[in-house]
Length: 210
Image (cartoon, rainbow, N blue to C red):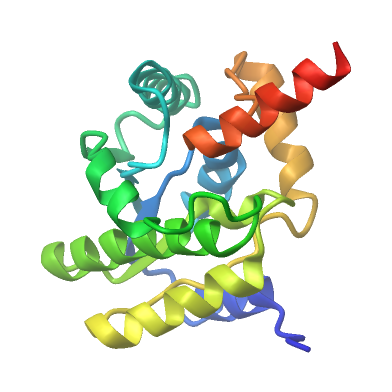
């Protein structure tokens, strides 16, 4: 059993900074998860958000979630200090990655490959632009396996020769804080993870209960 405390590991990294503010490329999966993570990380790092989520379906939802993120950064008063590096949907990246896994259950192998895809892109851009670390907001949600995400990211970091910023942002009441911030700033909270498979699963569940 993995008993690592990723938030304590992050604490130790911060303590060793000696007042410096390293540059971190933070993959943002959505506005709600980004809220509490931004509030915390911007106290210690110079943060650039990466919007790369080719899994989000359909295009209108992709655009709505991106605009939600942009508005959140502005409403939190971070527009002058937090940059956003945005990529188009690139749905072909996602479908190529999960080919053959379309019928996997939610949270299974398809989701693992989706995490891997987005972490790979973040690590690649971290190296390209010379960031000190890369990280993701994905670990804030209780529905996401922080142990798995950290393990994938550490493997990718070694392959690219970059540094991963460990995290389990749901700890220390992080998820509840995100709910508070979403209420404060009237943030759109999506009803499904993002991909068409999670949407169809939700729609099927709704039809069965109606």
